[in-house]
Structures are given as C-alpha cells and as structure tokens.
Image (cartoon, rainbow, N blue to C red):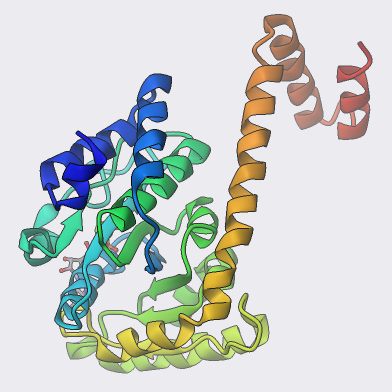
Length: 307
Ligand SMILES: Nc1nc2c(ncn2[C@@H]2O[C@H](COP(=O)(O)OP(=O)(O)OP(=O)(O)O)[C@@H](O)[C@H]2O)c(=O)[nH]1
Ligand SMILES: [Mg+2]
C-alpha cells in the first residue's frame, strides 16, 4: 500500500497501514513512519473518551460521530486498551455498538489492537491518529477505559478529554478515580434517561461541585458537567466540545510531542539498561529488597550505580 492509495480514500490500504503501525517488527514500524511522512498535515480535532467500563463510551461515540457527519465532518475512531484481561477482548470488539458509524463511508472505526505495554499502545495510537488524519478524517475519537494509566496517556494524545460518568449513588462518585476527574475537560453523565434521570441530574450537580474544587487542566476553563442520554443526538455535548477546542488548546500539541519523546527515551534507556542479564537480575533483587523495606530506594540506586 502507498500514500496515494490512502489519499485516494482506499479503505483497504488504510486498514493495512494501521496493521503496519500495530506490528512489533522494526521494519514494519519504519515503513509506517515513512508512510506517515508522505501524508499532508491537516487541521483536525482530537477527542479522548474515557470513563468506567460500561458507562456508554462506545454508544456515545456512535451518536457523537453521527452528529459530526451531519456537520460535514469525517470521523475516525480508535481505542486504547492496555489491559489484557478484559472480557470479550477489545473495547470496540462489539461492533454492533457502532454499527451505523462503521457502515458510513465518511467514518472509519478501528477496533482495539492487541493489548500491550502502555508505552507501545500510546506509540501505536499516536501514529494511528496521524494516519487517519492524513487520510482525511478530521475528527478523531479515541476510546479508553478509565482504569489504570490509560486515561493519563490519552490526555497527552488528544485536544479534549471527555469523561463519561454514570449516575448512581453518591458513593459511586466518591469511588471514581481522582485521576479520571483531573484529566477531564468535559464531563458527560450518561444514561440520563427513563428512571435514571433524577439520579443523573443529582450526579451531575455533585460532580460539578467536586470539579469546581479540583480546577481544570486548561487555564480559564470551567469543566462543564452535562447530563444526557447516549441514545439521542448529544447536541449539548457537541457544543461543549467545540467551545473547548480553541487555538490555545491546539497549540498544546507541541508539548505533547515533547512528552512522548521523553517517555520514549525513558522506555528505550530502561530496555537498554536491562538488556544485560546480570544487571537485570540485580535490578530485580533490589526491587524486592525495596519492596520488603530492607533497603531505601536511595541506597538501592547508589548500589546499582556503584559499578
Ligand atoms: N439507557 C441507556 N443505555 C445506554 C446508554 N448508553 C449506553 N447504554 C447501554 O449501556 C451498555 C454499555 O454501553 P457501551 O457503549 O458498550 O459502554 P462502554 O463504556 O463503551 O463499555 P466498555 O467499552 O465495555 O467499557 C450497552 O448495553 C448500551 O446499550 C444511555 O445513554 N442510556
Ligand atoms: Mg466501549
């Protein structure tokens, strides 16, 4: 496959290029990078969609995506799924949840690639975003389950983080990870329909109060907390996402590049350092001793670098 086919809208070529990006082989990755260099830069909007399992992220992405198509946008959907034990495989595995969007020629939905270490997942997602953008998709939606570090990773990959929360008892909200709340730019309390409507409104109020105390990661931005149903066109959510998407926010992409450069160096240095078997053994030994409280982290580091 080549860049001409991708620019011409060949979906098969695009799928094959994504497979290249997902490959663990160094030559495949080099080919993918060469391909990415041939694609023109475009003005795009990137939104991360995070939240607890079953909150309705995929359903909301479908509704939001369909709304975006009506606005004349072209929509690309990706997933970050670093956990390997999720039942049923990938986050987007159940295609039925994005059936309409998947079928539309102006959208491209990529089910989650195989799980892996977060560094690798982030690299693949970053390149997949660039590839979809090069292919002409101007709204990229990235789904990730908010359990663990992936919500932090996604916040460094997108312009806007949308947190999908669930209505429920107050203690649900207390239980929601602080990290999830801290990375959110827009909060959507989902399943605000039928019997759940009062609970959803109450949850939205509580979250709104909590977020006022936490502040937001974008200076001058008050995180809006909306309640609604993913089963209907989420127009208020669409408007909030557009309000957050300012030139100042887009300018932060340069910082994100630096962030991934530094994470990449850390990963490579660590891999290089531990490629020596004796050193790797000593490292594991020291880790155990630190964990058992037998030695301080500082003393362990001093010992490791003594030689
Ligand atoms: N009533 C109602 N049901 C919803 C709504 N949004 C999603 N659902 C249902 O909730 C279930 C989970 O929805 P998903 O969209 O798969 O949730 P998810 O957050 O993507 O789930 P994971 O990817 O597995 O973490 C499905 O059965 C949906 O039909 C909503 O707004 N109202
Ligand atoms: Mg999902």
